[in-house]
Image (tube, rainbow over all chains, first blue to last red):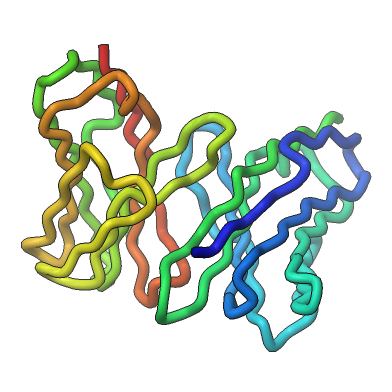
Length: 112
Length: 111
């Protein structure tokens, strides 16, 4: 089955800095890669996703890049704000054939 | 409002006392799942359902049961809870087995 590794497990940045979270996956057939944000006391919420036919996707201050050859994808947050503080999860799946496999999560702390 | 609801939100019980955590979604999604979240282990899938009366095991199904008699409901049953099932549980629904809409979570403590 799929295995997703996520790094780092914790990340502290100053407000305004950029943050990068990286994930690697094991199944080269996986073709859908979402990122979820989990705020304290809440369930995870989808913030951005990318499919295997695209190398990069951007939505305002967040972007995701995918390197299929190396089997890794990354979440980039620019101009971080305190409200970006949360746990972020990456995931991978082969659409229509399996269910999502999540990474172990990254706790991001943005200090004012 | 489109949402996934879970009840109860918090539960303290004792070893061996059967319990059920309910999950309901109002988005007419076919797919529903249960996850448990533990420190350092992330989100692990317990069971999932692709439609009414169709369920399958996820990565950590031991000690759990589910049923899907109606499209909107997907209860999680612990017939004989043990302390190692102390965890934070999330129900999720999806229209396409990709985008997951998570409930608010149920924090369970088994003594």
